[in-house]
Length: 70
Picture 1: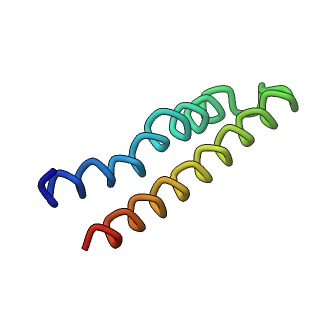
Picture 2: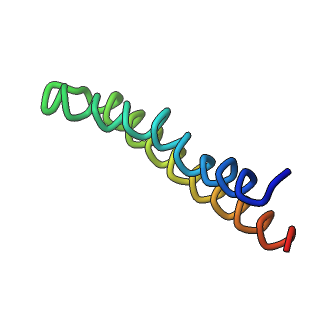
């Protein structure tokens, strides 16, 4: 695989959790605002935390793979 293609594929590891997990939970909290129940807020924040952890782990994995290939 070409090095530029590898970098592009691996940088998408950061975007995917952000777009698929974090933004919907943030938007949901923004839409419901003060009408959300405590359970909804806890689950949304938990989803955001899992998405951030996933993005960090994906980024670390991508950087490690890029560094290993050179």
